[in-house]
Length: 423
Image (cartoon, rainbow, N blue to C red):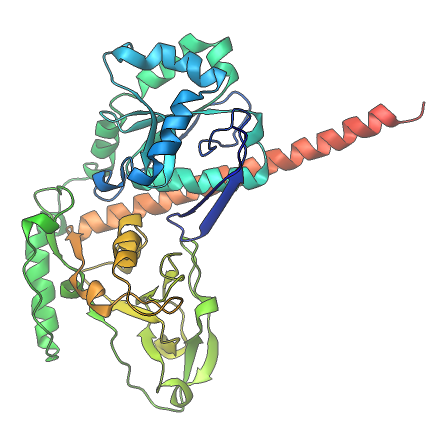
């Protein structure tokens, strides 16, 4: 007990987060946040497919950590567990120290996709707030709603705490209904994913470029169920992988080395202006609205990726350690970008990396062959809009947390000044 535990993980923004801390009881601390005192913070979003990838649940290497946490609950956790265990709350089963990917949740109700987190005083530091913000964003992306309570709720208002939890039962059905069924169906919405895929293939055939046929998707490759009007396909069926550009050598273009590609979610790559003739050979080509993804370790695992935009004359080139995914008018680049930022996309690619230590790369075939769910274009637009909406909300929450931290520090300075002021 009291041992320092180091945990390294990759979150949806692609940044490697190293969280080292010691809990007073000696357990791994992976379940904290900073929020207004006594206020419940709810962050709700839905993974494009709305499902938690089951192969990310309770990973074997976390078994010992989870067991230690269950055997060393904090007083607040132990008290809340007496109120949740045995299906006491509306016959809902809760689990203690349930893990999703690298994260261990205080309490989790699988039937409701609902996580309950208790936060102590150690969670009001800015660095911890950043980690928790990123952690919650990942859980949200997996379709899990997170309810957070300050520890004192358990002691001062347990009835109110349980009432808030009950109010959130069924949140997923309400959320899906409001997001995906808010507008009358249009022609665009009536077109199924299968019909859209046919149009994409027809459009690619018009280009005259021969592509290697990709194998049909087998049932064992499908990781989760999708709506009836969606279709499973391969990434290479809907994207052009690593295309080439052709323009005059004397025109300006954008040049992007790896440091200009961010691992944070929503940050677009920056560029240097160079003449096209100086960069057209020996570098990876891309154009506006292409999605670029790092392929070399550790950049791939850290999720270095971005949507190209605002290039001079619309084209550019850059580091050869990028793979380029060029969509079309039927697939939004923002949808492709969200897909390649998924934790399972990163983990599956990491498992098949090839090369010597320090120079391992994801094979290009992985980008061709990876199954991706293709929704109708209207569904893509709503998914992207909802991701952007929720990301903006989490950014606002982050700003409030940091502002609260700064206000607390100023108050502390004033109190210290007053305490030591000579009368």
